[in-house]
Image (cartoon, rainbow, N blue to C red; front, side, top):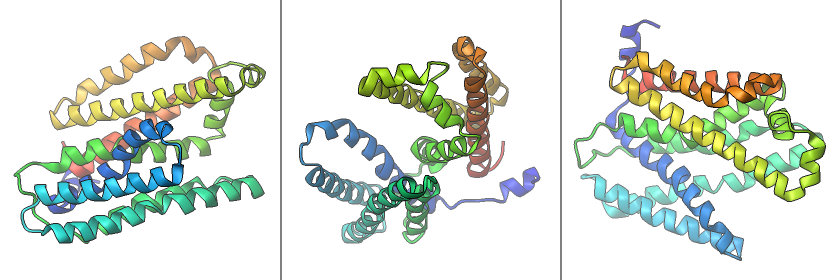
Length: 264
């Protein structure tokens, strides 16, 4: 695609504004809530409370930041978005049942919610109250948790690299992980979460460098990450996993930045 063709891919500010709010509240608020979830004993009540707070905050924020949509309309729209977000529960159960009965992973079903939210967001056409370029705000939201779904799916499909990493974690024997029990699995999962956070920051830095026309500096971000990971690159499985995941993360950040920012 030529530079002119990329620049012709214009996403309306109204859609970016609505999509940023929708994705932001669906995924960022969820992360904050998950950190508090251990304090809530009744999980059903906790999830209902989370979605109720989600509904109100979403409607209030949209109403405050827009200038031509009433609060009642935002309440209706945010309710639809909350109900779409609740589809994650049946999707999770379907994925779990299919994996238990057939052994196959249907991780792709996780995209039902973000795709549906993007479609629903296109229904709300409103003008932001403040004259702000929401392109960068949308990229920051999209390249965090929604992008992690895509990367994790691709890693699971790449010769079971993610599965091998989860089992060995850079060369640690499976027996050692099994011997540590739940604490070992928790530690492994914590390391994977840290890796995802590092990937998120990496993608943020890339789009920020693109927005400020510092494309050449992107190589420094990748180099710095590789230096930190260098001691682990002696393990072939980890090296393949790391290389594929890093390249995919960089390509995703570059592609989305090129489309949303309109080229560089």
